[in-house]
Length: 227
Image (cartoon, rainbow, N blue to C red; front, side, top):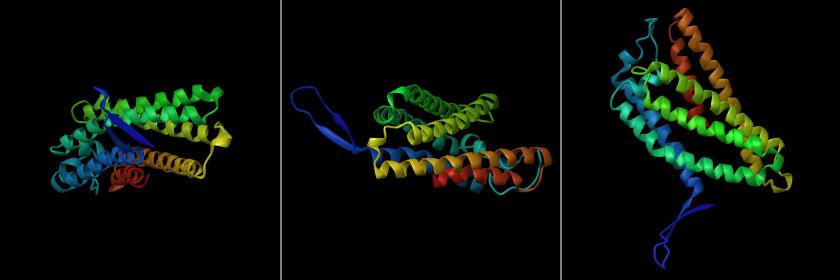
């Protein structure tokens, strides 16, 4: 599948073809590289400040919110990556919408619309948690972060169910079947990582055990690296 970019002014038309797979890879890679860069830079130059929680216990990894929002130039790197790739993410949502309409039963389009709505909210929440940092606007950052996590989980769940049970069976290819399996696998990795991260975060706040908070950070990082 290609995306044609052309000039329709005049009689001549000029096309630039971009593979959707390459566009998707760029869209995923940009925030991932920025995220890892911010965490590594924070560990190198702002380690003590980033790990200075109310518990005053030692940790290995810094807070994700602190890494991407509280220090420079990490904050600039993260915001630049998110703002650049955000329009592409919304365009990919449009492509997904067209694809889902073509493979899902007509009586299930409402569920597809709900899934797409969740995906749109997820992307706006990502912009929100990027714009409002945890140090400057914690309440807005917290709401945006929770919204991002919640909508991403339910979007993944709905899409997995739709493509497994409510699609037009004759249209299935081996590549699409493999894609559905990978989606289910990614969903379970994400739901497991978020559940464990929430557990260790609450445990850190309640018991103030050494190195527990860094487990939360590592669990958050795992699905971003392997999904």
